[in-house]
Amino acid sequence: MATKKNPPKTGTKAPQAASRAGVSNKNRAVVQKAAIGPSVARQVDAAPDNKTTDSTENAAAKAPSKVPTAKSPELKKGPKESNKANEAINVKANDKMNGKVNGKTNGKSNGKSNDKDDDHSLLESSAGPIPKAETGLEKDLVKKPAGSLKSPLRIFQIYNEPWQRDLLDANFSPLDNSKNTSELMDFAVFEQLMNTEYVKDAQLWGTLSWRFAELTGMGGADWVKSIQAHPGNDVYFCNPYPQIEALYHNSWLQGETAHPQFFALSQAVFQVTGLPVDELTSLSSSEQFSATNFLVATPKFWAAYLPWVRDILSLANKKLPPKVRDLMHSPMADKQGIHNGATYVPFIVERLFPVFMKTAGKSMKSYKIALPERERELNVHLKLLREMKDVAHRTKSAWLGVCWVNYRNLYLTQINGKEWAKTYLRTITPTDIKFS
Image (cartoon, rainbow, N blue to C red; front, side, top):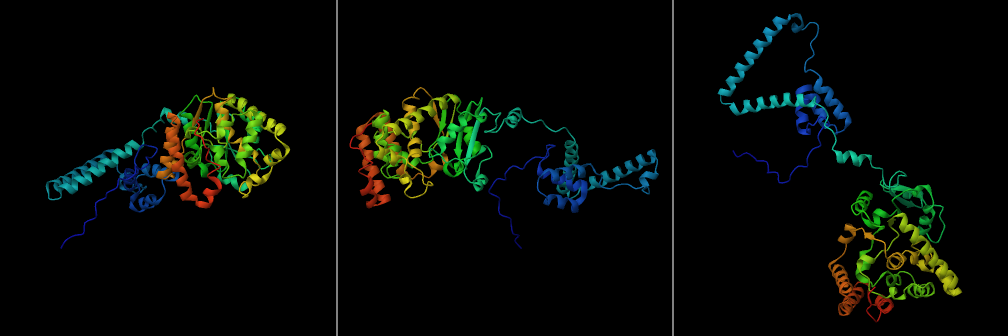
């Protein structure tokens, strides 16, 4: 009669965590059964691998399998008689074992003997000293978390409602922003932190939204690791919307599709403040895109960037015609009501960062943190479009830039429909190819 064979295992088991004494989980079970018997060992096997189980195992490993009582024959015998009895038992046991070895059950008896030897060696090793932690691990454990007032890197995560606090990342320091009513939104937080003890003596500091994980697809530990892996930069930033890099000349033209009259208002602001108007229609590389205020930077950067933005806004308020100025401060920017009635101001400010890095901050070094999860969401057309535009920008090829525009227009029409294309394509497509 054929016997049913178990199917071969194709996967590899994940390595089991070692105990504090250096014994693996598999061998630990052997120690338990040898020391405390099968019934108790089954209970310990079912327990999770935590400190309680470790303490139970240590106690069980030290406990004898049979505790002698005052009536036990071993205690009544003298030392010499006890030794003779032990020798006799050992001789009988050896004779019996040798007989099994010479018989048909040679392989089976050897297996049992090896298991017993392993038990003794494991019991001896469990009593050894606890291995020391690696030097690198010890250094990581003593590092202060980002956001700690004693850390050289301080990152704060803004939340506006109590329920949002449950979504914050433990690697950042929570920052209650519920009382902030400024139309500048995140930028107002930068200005408030600038002169506080929270950032005093910090080498790098910045803020992130409570939606950080949702927008970036990244954990706080990976964000910190990316910064630490690229030291020496003045500012670290990212773009959670890489599709914008593929589909638009720059973030200013993209703003027209999200906020009514955004492009015309931006032109007016650039003209009265002396900013380079060509930046609004130039083809920018993907490395220059930044669509949020997710910034972590040096005190040197903040000392230059924050006053620069404040001066731009001050000039705009003074020089813009009254109707245009009123429009800039109106909630018409959030016509769909998805930004809590925000005005145009925060959407202008968040797009000023790349302009600053090309003008007043051109001597500063920046590093754009990659977001793998967002990159994986790009389809083949978006990847090709972004690459085509980047090559056109790098080689300053107007011909390739025109090819990108034609491909882009076809894609947007196919995705968004003819009505959308009729409304926006002419506005977001400059007649000339210029490079920023």
